[in-house]
Image (cartoon, rainbow, N blue to C red; front, side):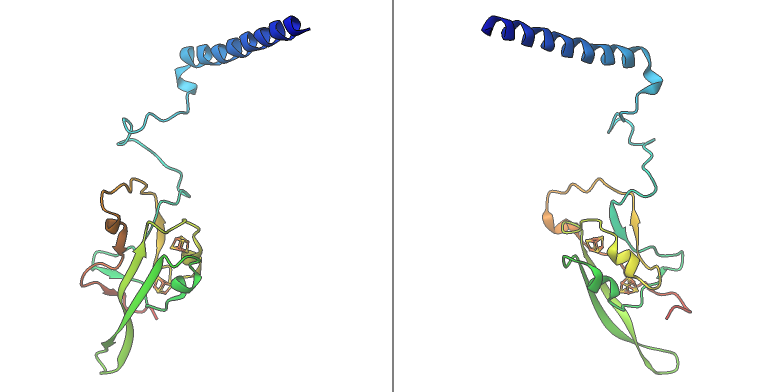
Length: 158
Ligand code: SF4
Ligand code: SF4
């Protein structure tokens, strides 16, 4: 009985090996069907799916303007405290006080890319970027300020 089981296991192992080798041989002769990406050799031509979530960003236009009102909806929606919104008060040309964003602090090291902040934003001020190479030597480098220096809110966004 022992011998029978022993031989049966060897036969199964050889079958499994041949199956794997058959697949390897197939892709060896059908290069065009290979879907594995040769990263990082393909860094310059790498195409990620549009829906890939790599990092929350705040787009700015050519006038260094963004669409963030500082409403804090994203901060409240974030389940793990990744976002901290610090606001200030700007003075409008009419002399009135208006709430504005001072700093949008984003802790990339905490972000789970759940997208809840982006869905919560009423002005589409933030979105997901495809960037995924986030390795740094210092953990503090993963804390980012998303609003650029001297940027301001785009006119007409309330
Ligand atoms: S994607 Fe999710 S975890 Fe990341 S900042 Fe937005 S709400 Fe928070
Ligand atoms: S990014 Fe959107 S949700 Fe977050 S503070 Fe700015 S306007 Fe509000």
